[in-house]
Amino acid sequence: MGRTGKAMDTLRRVVDDAMIFASLLVLAWPVFFDDLNRRDAGVFDWAWPTAVVLVIGVVVVKVSKRWPLAQYAPAAAAVVLAAILHAWMGGASRELTWLIIAVAAIVLVRQFLGARTNEGLIRDLTRQRAIMARQAFRDPLTQLGNRAMFIDHAEDALADADETMTAVIIIDLDGFKEVNDTYGHAAGDELLRTTAARLNANVRTNDTVSRLGGDEFVVLLPRLVDDTIADTVADRILRDLLQPLVVGDIMLSIRASAGIAITRGSGHDVDEVLREADQALYQAKAEGKGVARRFDPELFARTEQRRLDEAELRQAFAEKQFEVHYQPIVDLDGEHTVGVEALIRWRHPERGLLPPAAFLDLAEELGMLPEVGHWVLREACRQAVAWQEHTPGFELNVNLSASQLGNPALCDEVLEVLTSTGIPPHLLVLELTETVALTDLSESARILGSLKGLGVRIALDDFGTGFSSLSHLGVLPVDVVKIDKSFVQAMQESGGASVAEAVLQIARTFNLAPVAEGVEDAVQASRLRELDCAQAQGYHFAKPMPAGEVTDLLNRQAALKA
Image (cartoon, rainbow, N blue to C red; front, side, top):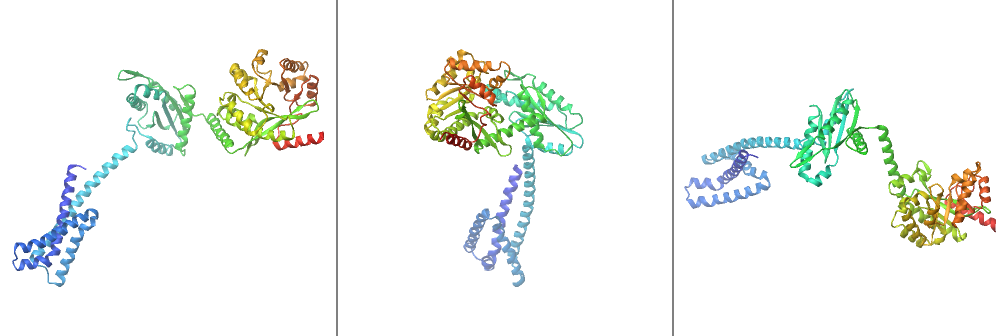
């Protein structure tokens, strides 16, 4: 509010107070002052009723500050009194008449001042609303539009597109955080202001440039007739931004990436278009930054599916949708079950039972395998203890992933499972593939040695496929080698048995227990017996099955022996 407005407000308050005191005098006149006026009373006689009026007036002024309508009560009462005197008492005295006229005049002046004050207030409110409207749609640092302005303009552009195209380009500054951290926020702010100016210099007058927040900007190109214009604008912006910028004694270069989304016609949702431009920006950054990329629906579909798969997998673990199935390992001399390999399955609510190949790679990428693997180990050991009560010496094989082997807490976790479940350590076989073991041979040897120190046994899975050498077998503390199924299945081919036979010979040389994997028919099983392979597993003997079916299998096996 300006000085004129403040003066008017002060004058209004003075008039309000005068109206109160004048009205109180009108009310007091018939009671006190009329008689005093007729008998020519002295000063003292006039003083005490005047004091009463003043005190009551001060009280009314104070009360009206809290309840503004109270200031009009004396004036209203004075008007009522004037009406009574006129109607029933033959009118008022000359002095009282002048007081009533004074009250009426004050009320008129008050109304005039109120109108003028209201006009000033309206002007002030209008000015404040205009300032707030500008602030609501402007970024204070760059003076560009903000997200709200972009959304407002984009909704209008998409609604009025008709048969033309609308393009949205999101520009993100690469390395802006490093500029802030290295040169300070003043340099970063100047970088943002320069970016805003260069963006404005590369668009049409009817285009919209806004700052979405941080170092992210957006350009709206409405009513395009050629979609390549968006690519041209984006490339031109990126080139212009690369021009050197001097901030104080520092020379900076603004490197940026851009994502482009283009829609045709009206009826599109702003948030959807922004998501598409953001996805294209993500792709530009993934390709090395400093480039502009268009939204690719196929790539987006794959990315979206990946996101859904990740969410589903995390939800599956949280909701206990995983199960442990077990594939029997048989003694080829009599083909009776002597152990099982624990294999995880996902009981998907819509897709049914999924094998490990459908989700373990994703779980590895998400860093979930150490937690999932620990759960499998605990669940399998708990179940194996129940089987071992009725089948002494029954072995349990559990796989270790690369991320589990790299987990510093692996040995402690295995020890905790051994202790809590009570499984005999020598009946637990931990499997890992050659590829995992050979990633860091010395570190693998150290970790496996620590696990061996707990009393468990170690198996090398898919033996012969990981380019291992005999020297590696001498370094790794391995107890069991599992012959890869490709060698087993090759035995029926001409000369195919020679590889499996060689692997068995290596196992015997290093005093390792061999287990053949992937046995699919009786011919393969018979050939393995001829080669003195003691144990095997595969669909010829049994598929992976739930724990309950393994229990039934062991019960039937025990009944046959009885």
